[in-house]
Image 1 (cartoon, helix red, strand yellow):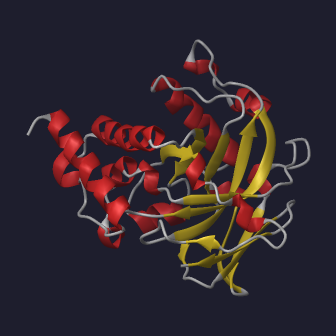
Image 2 (cartoon, rainbow, N blue to C red; image 1 turned 90 degrees about the horizontal axis):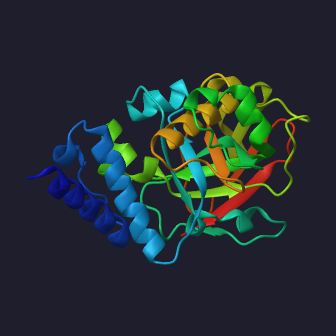
Length: 269
């Protein structure tokens, strides 16, 4: 099988799992440890969804905390795309409807800090992408819930599996009241995530690559190298502040991140 054939086969396998909601075998048996091939698979999946009417609204960074790396069995971060059809923030509105789980297979939820960019991060030289540059590019920070998911059966993934699977993305929720970075220091926030009133996950900003802004800088460098830089208006999910946890239909999930109003959602099948 040629490299392109392997990429096409992996795209087909993951696409079928998404369409049927039946988890599939890992794709590393097709693409091995070839990271560029894994990102090519990711691009194939994203392009298919764009052709179906979705739009790119930002990016997500995955596996930024040691806790999540241990859960996934990986040792480095990755990134994926946020698409318009992944945004279920309406569920966090006052009296908002429950969030449907109909597109999900094996969901888990995690609390994060998100950023909205005020300007492009696209210097000529990637060496210019510093913490100071990305901090200046942030318009506001927001509380976020990411509903991660895997099309790979039993979450039995390797690093190229999660990369290929759009960084194990599912859905996302962001709050409506953002704060400028003059009003909050992302690395200092504390996070508590409860399900039906019971704390199930906790962490802090320093768990996210030492600082969520460092995660944003890492992503900006990767996006620059891939020739698809971060743009003004993009939403960036910077990565989990604590372990991700499973949930079920009927559960009420609340993320409390210091400095922000609590983010509360309920799920239904």
